[in-house]
Length: 502
Ligand code: NAD
Image (tube, rainbow, N blue to C red; front, side, top):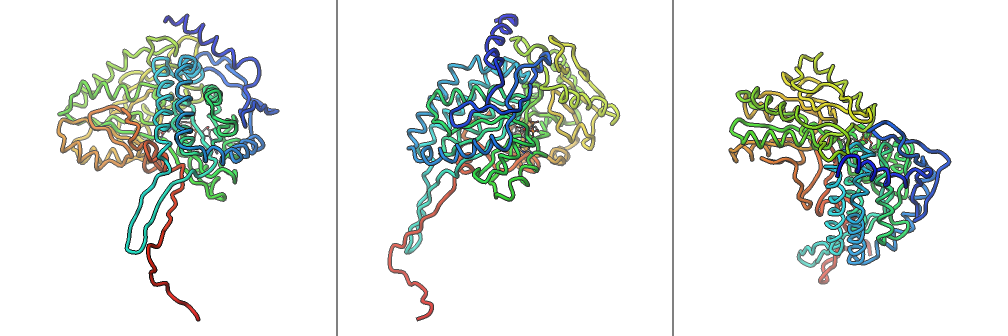
């Protein structure tokens, strides 16, 4: 379909958000706040929607609704929850185009990737739905005179706080396992891109998720988000966002002893040895930094290349980057759309001056682009001649910006890779499998891919170490977070009980 046709479709899908403030969804009802805020599209900076601005009161209503719904939802059989969550997946697929178009206009992410992200959201629901029937199962642990039986049960109502970068996919990734576990949910989407969260909760209710089980409250992080993390009825917070915000949430949740799960920032190395398949390595490095506008937590934002091939490899990457099409997110030919907001664009582009002031070179990019609608377009950028102590090698830029650093030895590559605050993901390229294993073992990262870009197998653990997070998602790890494990010990005979007193 052409860009013009796509724009018309998007306008039709966006109309539903333009007839008045977008309401919260609490206990199966639309709830409006007295206050509201406007969102803009990163494409043309024009107002996209007015959103109800929730705070302490709306969060309190939603938490109470989630608490009231908890008993019913958690006592449903796992099979019933599985069936309902499969209905949600079906309903997502049925509205996948609408979700993708709304997401593209709300976030600036291109339709090329957003159509897949919508379908991946459905896959997340199916994957966790299928595990609901066995989620409460545990182990039997035997010792002389005693049988122990462990089981799991849902922790209670939980808060889920999501960021703006790929909000639909990330929301499904967090909410689906919570519901499959038997938890009820209060979701606080990011204020910069809240529209697909509204579609998602509507879809869920139509698909049979009972009122109160899934509540969505919009608002600012410092007010609505904060109130959610402080609410005594909310037993756990699953958060995806910046490392700094994670610190705030941890202290905000301290007085109510919140269980927290954090998926935070990254400055992920891709390490390329000279024996690697260099064409594949270059394609993967380019994909991992320039797809999703570079606004991706697992982006390969540091390119560590063995010294002998550094110049040639950087030239190859720069050539590929320079031919990536930047433009309207609904253009099917476009790979990089506008960044989420002018403030974020200014942050990303500020690193162009920082790079040159630090003595690095700009091999390609390093400028904004005057794209359709005048939105927040940035050229795919590669910094070379960098050293690991530079800010461009240490700080999360969260845009289509890559910093390339040479290394002399395997040992130096590992030292450089680990010499950052973050530890989310790492990528290693070598044909020497022993080296691949050694390096992946030595990397301080929650996830390492060898000879691959980030391709997810949903049962595997997802998460980071150091400033990149606490806890793991995926497979059974998600259920461990949303559930409490209980042990029941049964005496199998008349063992000796210590006698105290008469
Ligand atoms: P952010 O931390 O600014 O905001 C994320 C969410 O937290 C928003 O909903 C916001 O309203 C809320 N929030 C802000 N302050 C809060 C507070 N004091 N209490 C409660 N909630 C609060 O992050 P962002 O800018 O929206 O997203 C980008 C960041 O997310 C990047 O650092 C990126 O690496 C990270 N991210 C990580 C992963 C991962 O899986 N590790 C995935 C995607 C994004």
